[in-house]
Amino acid sequence: MKSTIEHPLAFFDWYLENEINNDLKEFYIHITEELHLNNTDQIDKVNHIIKVLNIHHQEEINSEYITFSFESSIKSKLKQEVKLTKEFIELGFQKRFSDKKEVKGYADFLRIKLSSFFSNKACKDFPFLTSYFEQLDNLINQYSKQSTTYSYTPSFVFIAESTKEQQSKIKALYKLLTENPSIISCSKKEFTNAFTGNEIDEGINWLITGKNKDISKPSLLYFLDELINKGFLSRNIINDLYKFIRYVFRNHKGNVLKNLKQSREGMSDNPTSKDRIDTIISSL
Image (cartoon, rainbow, N blue to C red; front, side, top):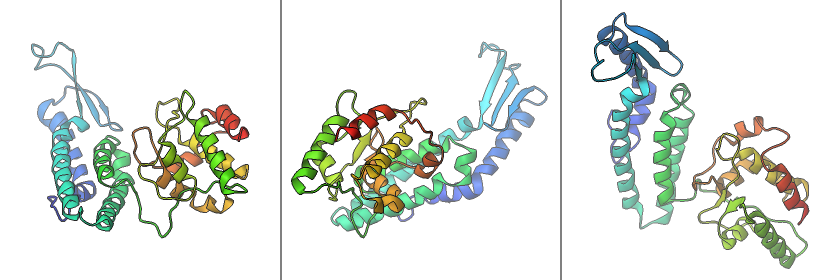
């Protein structure tokens, strides 16, 4: 099935459900039965990598073995389809640019569809697919920074006895979070909007990273939990906390945060930068 301007994600919708497993079968048949019959040394059926004896290409490849991967076998196809999909998405936004609500609605529809791709079994079986869908997600973010149309603005409201005190506390929190090395990246105005219940434009980039060098969502969850526990944010937001986080916070690249529930389930009692977060909040 081909993607079109009306259905820019049609190929991937079809491919994940119907075709990728057929390509996987063809990959194994092509390598083990057609090209290298009886010369297979190792088959990794988790990562779909085949290692074969280098019998026919010793002059070209100075190695005893040749490695083939399923990811490499379909890389060209995926890159071509991503390029085509990007073109259709851009045309879709171009058609709607005169109407801000249509732009947001179109972006929301595409994100919902992409979300179904990220949670699809194929993405779990073939993790390399995620990088292709992230390219599409990043493109959508270029045209519309808001991830969802809400009946209210899910930004935080910092609790204080007066507006003056609220502004003073938010200013102090921003200064503490941006001291070197910065925990966040955003303008002071954007940060103020994010904690006074106002609409935001680009969001707050959370910069703390974990041992795997990826953004530390547990540290962000801990930070917000402590603001709630210390009475700076209302407990009423707990049930919708992930919605608030997705609206306000981004990763270090400016992309919407995903898999927050899984991060919550895997949280330890000592998330990255816990001591610094404790010090910051106790200083307010």
